[in-house]
Length: 127
Image 1 (tube, rainbow, N blue to C red):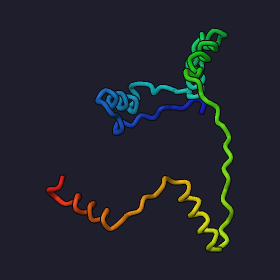
Image 2 (spheres, rainbow, N blue to C red):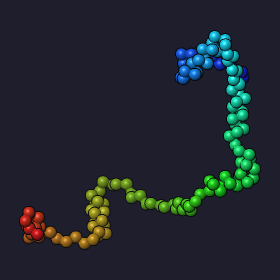
Image 3 (tube, one colour):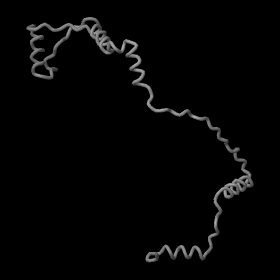
Image 4 (cartoon, one colour):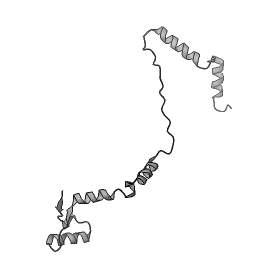
């Protein structure tokens, strides 16, 4: 895309000034500009990096600006044991249930009297 000629179209102009310029170019009253996209792109690339950024001081400033501000903890690997696959033996499930109950807090017995008292306390007007 070296040199490319601009072809003005007055119907695509956004402003009145642009429309007038496009009409003048189409009529030959004004010369249409030649645009060298490659040269413009190269110039833009040169301007995108400042002179200080090309020096050691610029590299050091960039390093300081992008350095992490907080300490990041390292991950620790943990090993989890997977339970053996189920065997279908009911005794295995009874044993697991007993181990689970033994590991929890002790369970108190719920009697009919305790249940009746809880229902009575739950009625409206009791406090």
